[in-house]
Length: 406
Image 1 (cartoon, rainbow, N blue to C red):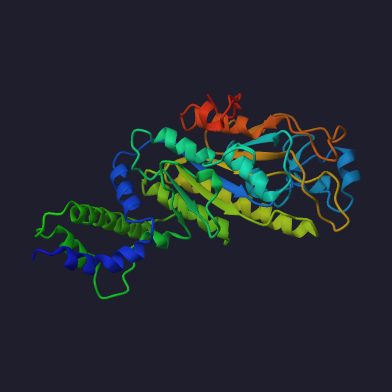
Image 2 (cartoon, helix red, strand yellow):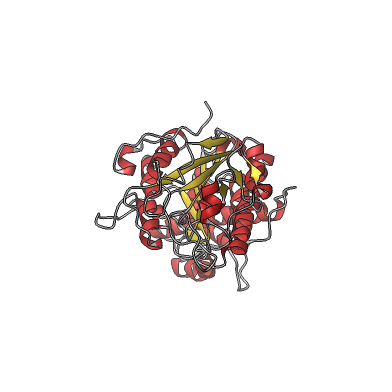
């Protein structure tokens, strides 16, 4: 039976509402693009919000200045997982240590930027946009990268953000809409009324009684959206892995990312977050818990994508907006600092330490001095992983950090 436009909209309205504001258009685009995927490189960003204490993550256990500065918080030499004769991982960061042993972790030391801003929000915005507050900042570095990569296919879904918080500025794009979702369930059509997907599909495929380009668009979009919805339902139902993820929000998010990668969505960038690194007081236990979540979740994720044959396509970046001060404070915590290490994980990274550990004797107002601008890391990701020129995206030419195997 042919449907009028009014009848069609009445029938499909519950489905459209269930998709949310970002769908079904992006699902339709994902379905169309997914048929062309295969070997595109994927970037997974893990944002460690709050300012991770890099000094108690990669521990200079052979340096007396470290123990003098941190009488309560220093990690004993006997507890670290040694990287070399001078540095070792916090014992809770076993997942990171395991990745290093598997030759799947690069540790870029001494990362920061000139004239650092120690405000969480402004510093994160600088990392997200590569620009200062005095500049116009309509988009983020990943948004610009998406616009560059997708210039010939502007309707594709290029990136996804998972989490309960506001979408990171880094993903703001002038040309593409990046969906933010809390869970995989948000992708799927959930009909609360008696209409079923099959009824809606039948309606979509029914002979159209009116000549209407708008109606054609809605019908076509709905049909492809249903395809993706059903495929993602199968992904959730049929996805199997021998990998055990930690029971944590970050573990859940990265497990979902692994599922979507295996579903062959065209998405090139996935973005997840873990909060709580602003450890001004009683840092020891809280920081250990956070490092355990990051290390175990990342280790499980890398193992999972490898188990499903996607390991060579995936690069993970773990960063924080700044490090912590060298000296602990009176509350057994640490205050906002400057330079810190960041981490790159995957089969293709040059595993091990990149760059030198900043001096503990030559500090800048009590903080470690940075020697590697974070935009140099971005340049390496953009040019050598995502395959797009970095100059315009970063607003300046930076020497790419050499972190990939040749």
